[in-house]
Length: 274
Image 1 (cartoon, rainbow, N blue to C red):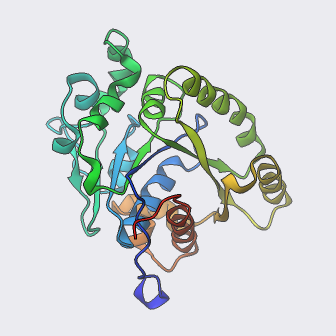
Image 2: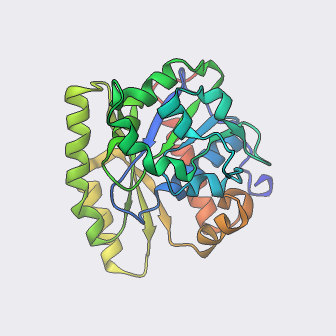
């Protein structure tokens, strides 16, 4: 990354930005986006915590988190009130990046949360007990659903980032997701905002990708990042080595695109520390 001139320190936000990465459609790049944006931010001087709220635990795998029957995970935070600080593990080879992992236990959390008091705000309460002064970003990888786990993320965060695959079906579920965001705004978290939309799996060889990109930009304007994420074999390969593409192959087109997207996010912060 140094050889490509990408070693500058990016500005830090005035306060920790809590961003939920959400889209109820599977396969649009939520986990890939969360992991690589987090890695890129950390590589440029930001202090980042990834919260893996997806029972599949793919973000934990991509960040080389240990996951076994003894692992204390975000499940124990939501259901048993474990402190997030005790769960967060440093990510190997990326200083400034931590991950609160997910295990298969999280699959049953939706059912167990139903009977708990203030079930929609369990994650928010955990964040409130966490001293975030030593963090710049918390990125929450949401599951591909609109259930209680995703609602917990939306109640706990200030911003929502929506990855949208550049294919027709990706647009169909967007309206439902935005309706849910409005419901959370109305009843649970008035400060919630869709701050970022990221176009993923862009294929410049097809007219469809361009049409989807144009349509999303016409509807959402500046909320959509200028950077688009192309389809990339390297991005797909990286998790099998327990890495983000930022460390697996920093010169690949996917890594460069995620780097540019992360830079946009960093410089879009309304307030920047002097």
